[in-house]
Amino acid sequence: MADARGPDPAAPAPTPAPEGHRFDSGWEPQARDARQLRPSVPQSFQTRLTFAFMGVVALTLVLVAPVVINRLDDYFRQLEEQGLRSRADATAQILAAFMIASVPDNQSVVRELADGTIVLNPRARAVLEGDFQVLDLTASRIAQADTSVAVGLVGPDTDGVPVVMPDPDLVFTAQLQGRGDPGQVRDPAIAPQDVEYKVNDTPAWGLLVTLSNPYTSRAATLANVTALILIMASVAFLVAVLVAAFLAHRFTTPLTRLTEASRRLADGDLGSRVASDELSTGTLEIRELSQQFNAMADRLEESVNIIRRDRDYSRDFAADVSHELRTPIAAMKMHVELLQGPAGRDEAARAEFLHSSAQQLDRLDWLAQNLLELSKLDSGLVLLDLRPEDVRATIESAVEQQRATAERKGITLTASVPDRPLRIRHDPPRVGQIVSNLVGNAIKFTPAGGDIRVVARAEAGGGARIEVMDTGVGMAPDELPRIFERFYRGAEANEARSTGSGLGLAIVKSIVDMHHGSIAVESRRGVGSRFVVELPRDPREVVEVEPPRPDEEPATGSWAPPAAPERGKVDDSSPIAPPPLNPGGAP
Image (cartoon, rainbow, N blue to C red; front, side):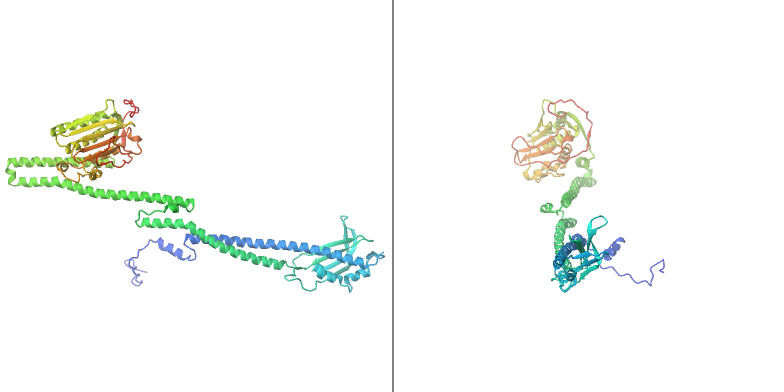
């Protein structure tokens, strides 16, 4: 016994596993051993299906062939017995005719003595056993069987029916002589056949003819039929093998294709699918399985693409955040170093550095607030407080907040809203943030003397349409698809773009998506830009969002972001049935 403190030194050293070998769990070798104990069991489903078809056909042939042969044997036996009975009747008629013809007219063939003894006329007896050999010839040529003839008087039986009562002393036999026809042999299985032949004479007499052990072709015919059945069974089994192999291949081909597609998918080929032409073949279950596999592969590919996009986005986002934070931090670090030096004793320089540092701190605070806002919006932590209120007040309040900034820059800011209430379900602070960010963005990129207009109007479906138009620097067409990305400030840097955080439009896009609305932009370099926001009457009723379509012909370069996904994180704190203030609008 090995010591508990270590391995037994006498025990053989374990064989090292080959390189690249993977040790299996305890039950897996047992499973392999179980398979090794059954090497004759095929592992392929196609092979098993083929063998199953072959087994069913073979079992059917084994069960049916003996029954068919047995029924044919009975049928042939019945035919031979019917033929033997017919020959027995013919034999009786022929012998009776010969016996009657051999006796003179004034004599009887059979007569009964006073003591009850039956006497057969010598001439008639000569027919049955004399030199004429009539009985022997009849047995060989007509009966083709061992023949027994009993002569007797006709009398009533127990039921009163007249029958031939043979006399034991008047029984004559003849053995079948010679050989039968080709294919015929003695057949003792045929039951002996008895036939009576009555002659109305004085007294009435008759013959009882019995034929047995005849020549028949039953055995030869049955052997030929059995051989034919075996040949047909062999041909049927061969055809069954071919049909089984074909059907098994046809049944398993869709499974093979599905297995290959699954293997490619497992190997990383996310575009692997079951071909559409193969979906029309196979059984209903296989088609449904293939369709479900394609649907699963589509969802898996979509999920992986989303994960990849999120990974790339997170990497880019981290890089952008690092870059945005590094700039103000580097500026403040430089200011601190300067203040620690001789410049710190200069009042004017110290005041300038402190003012610049305060600006950088404001920028950091603004950046942190925007990042926190975006994080909350994307994570779903922000719940919309939907209220059926007049959106005109929200728009006008947001415009007024930006009016002082526009006046300081010398920009004309106007707002145009409908005369009648424009009531939709919305979150007023969030919609105000949309307008405020768009107007602030327009002020940033519009030079002095420019014009900014905010137009709101009702849509046909009861929603609201908000347009923010400016006469600013505009954007190139290749910039439009990226303007809603975080930290994007445009392909060509300028003073206005360098001062922003690049998060305002991203926040606008997130809020619009949460309202199940849509946003589009039109812009032209040197002409200006126009942002179009459409908000539905009730975000809870929106299933699919289409990007807004401007009424007039768009300027050169326009883009609409893809439809917003459905979001259910809303908090409806509005009354159940608000009064309809605008006809055709939202309730």
